[in-house]
Amino acid sequence: MFCKNCGKEIDDKAAICIYCGVSTSGTDISQRKKNTNVLAIVGFILSFFISIAGLVCSIIGYKRATEFGGKGKYLALAGIIISAISMAIVLLYFGGTAILRALMNRF
Ligand SMILES: [Zn+2]
Image (cartoon, rainbow, N blue to C red; front, top):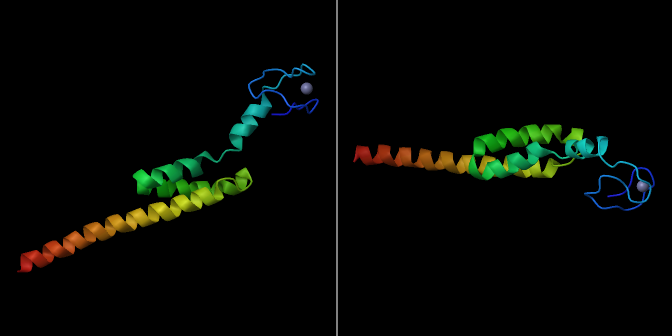
């Protein structure tokens, strides 16, 4: 990272700038946390395992992407698509087996 005070490059873990001695902690770290669209990432990961939860998180993450300067927008969009596809597969699977079972009972 770069020092807020003198602009020189310093170690990411450094608590104070080695050039001017100004503290690097405080607002800088919380701002960096705020800039990460966690919901988009969580939604994207969840979409592979729990499609409904992934879909919900991705939609919220997508809507909130503007708050993060567009960060995670495409990730959230990918999460929405993946969870929608996996939900469609599950629905087709259960729908298909239900139809098959109904046909089997008829004969
Ligand atoms: Zn400095």
